[in-house]
Structure formats: C-alpha cells, structure tokens
Length: 288
Image (tube, rainbow, N blue to C red; front, top):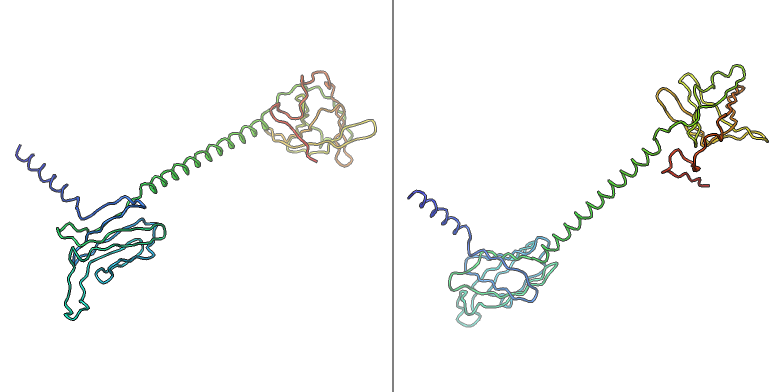
C-alpha cells in the first residue's frame, strides 16, 4: 500500500512541474492590451502565428529595453543605461521606472502591450498568442474542402456509373426478331456472302466469319441504289456488319461481286413503337 501511495505522489509532482508558469498563452483580441513581465539578464519571447512576419517593433523607452524581431517572434529584455546627468551613474532596470508600452506590427495584425520589470519573480520566458477565430476558420475551410472533395467524388462516381450504364445499353445483345431472309448471288461472290442475317426490329445484322471480307451495303430503290449507314461489331467468332435500319431489298457489293438479299419478313413483325437505336433507352441524333 505504501508503494502505491509513493508512486501516486511522484507522478503528481511530475505533472505539476511539467506546467511551467513562465510559459503563458494569450488569446489575441484586437482591442486588448497585453502585459509582458521581464527581468534583468533574461529575454522574454513573444510568439505570433506562423503565418505572420514581424515588420516592426518599438517601445516608448528604447534606452531601457532591448527589442529584436525575427520571423514571427519578438524578444524583449530590460537593460540598464548610463545617466546623462553630471553624475553619469549606471541605472539598473527596476519595476517603477522601466514601465512603458510596446507596439508591434506584423504582416497580418497590430499588437499593443505594456512592458514591465517583474518585482516578484513572476517574469515570463515566453508568451504565445492563440487565434481561436483563425483556427475556427481553418477548420471551416478544411471542412468545406472535404465537402467539395466528397461532392466531386460523388459526381465522378455518378458520371462513371452513367458512362457504364450507357456503354452497357449500347453493347447490350439484341434479341433477333426476324431470320426470314432470302439470298441470291452472282458467280464468284462467295467471299461476301454473310454466314447469317437477321434483324431485331430496328437494325439489320450481317455476320461474316474471319475468312470473309466486308462488302459495301446498298438499298435497292426504284431509281437506283443508295449506300447505307453501318457500323461493325464483334460477336463470338464473327465480324458483324450492322445496318442502321430495316431494308426490304439489300445489295452487297465488292468489285464485280454481288449478293442480293430479300427481307421476306419485312413489315410482318414490326416494333410496336419506332426506334432508331437498338435500345429504347438510347436516342440517336444526327448532327449536320
């Protein structure tokens, strides 16, 4: 039991000595005057915000006070001086005659204070200024930045999800609605004969194996032929040429090669509602 009590006493004493009264913290207020208590042979340091730079520091009793500045620090100490009267005596700092004021201008603030020589041994080693409003503003800015970061991340995720949705919609496999196509060819035209043809009610699909080449695709009209808009896709082992509409009579051409394809299911099983893309959620717009 005695050992336990002894340990408690030791730790209590260490805690007391860890908080030195010669180190002081002050909350900055623009219209309040602070007081510095110093003593002969020691300097007292004034510490301002790290974001501040001291521009000037002056006192009303320059003969009795040594003042220096560096960065965001000002250091002061009382000093003796020789009297200018006939006696020329050396006058040492004292609590009555060395009382004066100090003015400090930094890159951000103005500080006004009193300088005193301590007579009770209650002098200070360092005075550090605190800025609750600045700290609150930093916290606010940090919170605002974090909020903006989260909002940007949310927008990015939403955009990525939308991009993926559109990609999935565009690449979604279609369901064939009509396989009823009749084919006729000229001689030596096997190279451009598709392995299969079907439509999904919106687009027409021509599948070619890897040994074949893509032909140009035309619509047979009363006054001639017109070239059709197409794009290509991959489907398993086939290269697929996709025509962006349903055609009743189609010509495939490459050089002197010709294949005619008749859509015998044309108009038999139409879409309930017209679409110009393979997916009802995607709209196609031609910009001229």
